[in-house]
Length: 179
Image 1: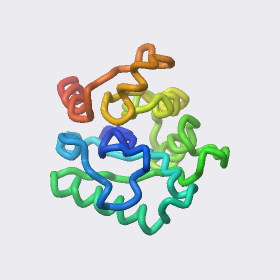
Image 2: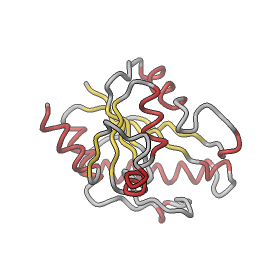
Image 3: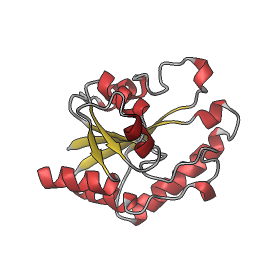
Image 4: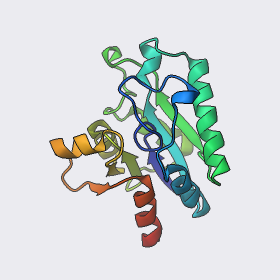
């Protein structure tokens, strides 16, 4: 079984500069749920690594985050997919934790808890910080243009050699075609 690491906001669901604070605000990007379903059918273990500083900023609580994730799990399951685990950083940027991307703490946690080596594991994100966290652990960074991806691509710093795709559906297409 293979592993893929996905960022949440901007990769699976629409992102918002005002944060995703309720299940009602969580809206899947067209094709993302089906992409996860195709990866699941191809025996990929799908895990999420996401910064959720809205917790640390007091914009929502752990119960609300759980409700948002329950909706995501339900919608992915309805499409025929499965998310094995969600790893999240609850800290605000000023907390200087080790788990907030671009630091690699979430990735180290994934490797430790799942007993896997992240070398060359695809890690899909829409921001430079996602790419940097993947690179720091030997994972294979992949940038999507959805969410903040187009802005990250326009800035073009730190993206040399990083594969770029329009969205998660295109990433799934490429991975499954290569299998």
